[in-house]
Length: 238
Image (cartoon, rainbow, N blue to C red; front, side):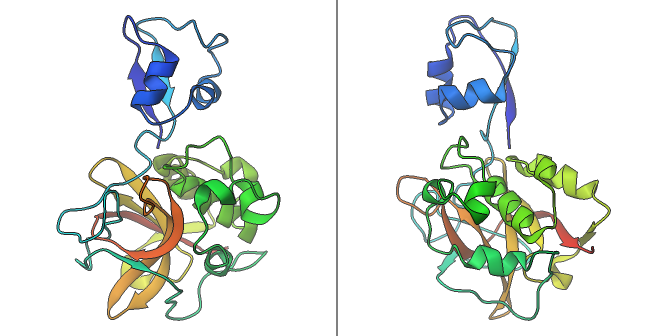
């Protein structure tokens, strides 16, 4: 999600972009009030895009740095599942199943997917840093399925959660009632993460999304298990 930062004397956009692992252009887009990248004022608030939208490995995991942890309800260890593990029919929108749409992109790097000129890639916003695309990807998939509009697209976990809460076509449910394609928001060690339910495997929940599994911390579309507390599960009822 995005977060707010109060500018201090001596701060520059380039320095803040480096600190928060984003870019000057992303900061400019997230803060349209700034007209000159070389002119920011101490005491003003700055919106940092995606500063807490990614996630880092949970305790007890076996993966590498920034590998996914996961949903606390199952207590499962982290994993990187290479194929779909759907356990029954998922929800569908007017244009198809979000789980099936997401599965078509398994193994793709988020940075490459954003540059595609059709489908989910076209729906995603390419200015979002490559390590914080979880909400960008889920929003793009939901848009392709016809479950949300372009105006409901959100690059932050909490922003997307609020929009789904305000959409009468979505209802909060428990994980035990989840279907493939349902939107799952999680609380992580450093912020939040959002994925979609992918089914059950060996009694444990799996999730598909844009996950920080690459060695450089960038994201790739994978199906993973998690150890993080779940904040909400949204199911499309339209």
